[in-house]
Length: 290
Length: 349
Image 1 (cartoon, each protein chain N blue to C red):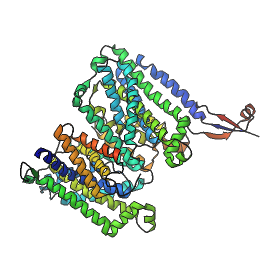
Image 2 (cartoon, helix red, strand yellow; image 1 turned 60 degrees about the horizontal axis):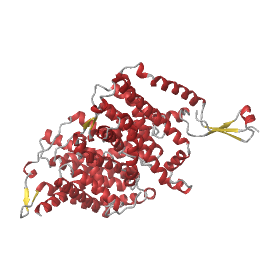
Image 3 (tube, each protein chain N blue to C red; image 1 turned 180 degrees about the vertical axis):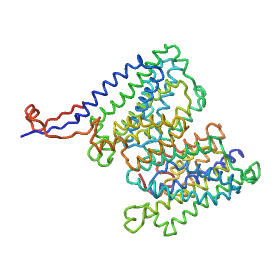
Image 4 (cartoon, rainbow over the protein chains, first blue to last red; image 1 turned 90 degrees about the vertical axis):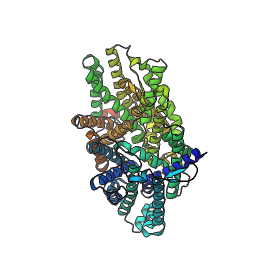
C-alpha cells in the first residue's frame, strides 16, 4: 500500500516538471497556433546554459536562473521575431520544418561544443534532502520545489492572461488573428513576446532538469514528446489542463517504472494514446482548434 | 479552325526520359563493372531517394506532415528480422513482404494518428514511432534493446550474387517508387490528392472521398518505407530498436525533400544529391554536415519555400515529370489528324 501511494506521489511530483516543460509549448500552441519542434532542444540548451553559468561563474545552481532565464527570454524573442514570424501563415508546414531544422542544428551544435558526455549540476543538499510524511513515505524537497514552481508559473501566467492588457491581446489574437490586427494589435511583436515568455519558462524547466538528472545533447526530442503529451492530455489552451496532463503523464510513467524499469516511458506514451482515442480534445480543452 | 492540344509532355521531358532510361540501363549493369564500394554508394543514393519520395508523397502531395515516418522504416527492418531469421523466409523475398507488413500495420495506426490534425499530427506520429521502438526494446526474443545480427541468414548466398541483388533491389526501389508515384499522380487519385492538399473542405464538397484517399496515401507511403527499411537493414545486417526506429531516418527524409523541393517529383532526387555532396565535403568534420544541412533547410524554407527544384521549375518552366496538363495551339498536321476541336494527348513520355 505504501509502495503504491509512494509511486503515485512521485509521479505527481514528476508531473510538475513535465508541466514546466509543457507550459512553453502550450503558450505557442495557444497563441501562435504553431508547434515548436525545437522546444525540447531549447530546454536542453537552457540546461547547458545553466551548466556553463555554474561552471564559469561559480554560482549557486538556483541563482543561475538570473542568467539563464533572461538569456532564454532574449533567444525566444529573437527566434520568433526574425525566424518564425516570416514563415507563419495558414499553412502549418513552414514553421514545422523550420523548427525541425533548428532542432537538429541545436542538437549537433551542442554535440560539437560539449561532446556526447552526460553532464549534471550539483545543487547541494537539497538534491537528497526529503520530507518525512509518516509511515515509510517521504518526498524529496527538490521534486516538491519543482512542483510548487510549476503551480506558481502557471498561476502567474493565468493571471497575466486574464487580468492584464497584454493577456487580453494574447487572447484576442488566439481567437481571431485578423480581427485582433484590425484592432491595432501588432502581431509580430506580440508573438515574439509570447515566445519570449515561453522560453523564459523553458529556462526554468532546463535548470530543474539539469539539477534533477544528467543530460546530453540528444535529449531534446524526448522532452518535446513529454511536453507535447502533457499539452494534448490536458487539452489545448488550458494551462491548468497542461498541469493536469503533466501529472497524469508523470503518474503513468512512475507506475510503469515501478513495474519494470524498461516500461516507464512506454506506459506514459500509452496513457497519452489512450486519452487521444477516448477524448481527442483532451481532458480540459478550452480553445477549439483543428 | 485550328484545334488546341492538351498534353503533359514537353520536348524537354521527352529528352530527359530518354537520357534517364539509358542511365538506368547503364546503372543496372553496374555490378559487372563497378566495385563493391561504388555499388554500395549508388545503392544508398537510390534508397535515400526512395525514402524521401515516400515522405514527399505523404507531406508534399497528401498534406500530411509526419515526423514519425521512421516508424515504418523500423517496422520493415523488424519484419525482415522476424521473417528471415526466425521464420526461415529467404531474405530477398522478405524485403517485399516487409513492405506488405508495413502497409498492414499502417491501417490500424492511421486510426490513431488521424485523430490529430496539422502540426499535432506531426508530433503524434513521432510518439507512435517511439512506442514501437520501446515495444521492440522490450521483446527479449528479438534481442531486446541490443537487437540481433542478420549475418547468419545471408552468409549462404555467394558474395557477388548478394551484392548484386541487394544493389538491384535498391536501384529498383529508387526508380520504381519514383515512377510509381509519378503514375499515381497522373491518375485520378493523384488529382484528388492534390485537391485535398490545397483544401480538404473544398475537395470534399466536390465529391472527393477525402478520408479514403488520405488513408490510401498513408498506407502506400508506409508500404514503400517498410520495403526500403528492410532493404537498408539487409545491407547493414544488424538490427536494434534505437537504430531502426531512429528519428534520423525522418530527419534525412525531411531535409532532402525540403531542400530539393517539396511537392515535386524531381525535388527528392536533387535533395539527395545535395545531401551526398554536403556529407562528402564535410566528411572530416564530425556531425557538422547535419548542422549545415539543417541550416540549408531552414534558409530554403525562409527564402525559397518550394526548394531548389521548385525555384528552378518556376524560373525556367522546367518539368521533367510533368503532372500538369498544358494547352497549346495544335499544328496543322495535328488538326488534320483530329478534326474535333480538342486533341487530348495524355502520353507521359
